[in-house]
Image (cartoon, rainbow, N blue to C red):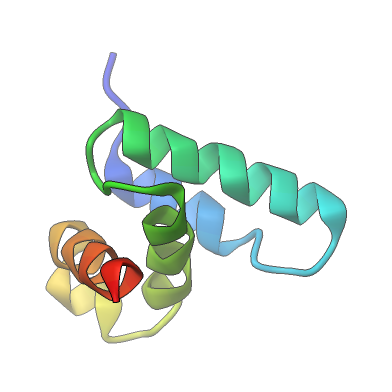
Length: 75
């Protein structure tokens, strides 16, 4: 069974709050993106969740969002 990257991005974007539970969930979901090779680091995964919340992000798709997150995380 495969999990769609869009599903992980949607769920991760819902946990962008400051509550400690949100931090834990966000980190685990970012690790899922790393394990699935969608992004190269947990920081990039969390950044992808933040980018995914923008309305324009869904027009470009999850591959572009993850690529942009990787690029920004390296800077």
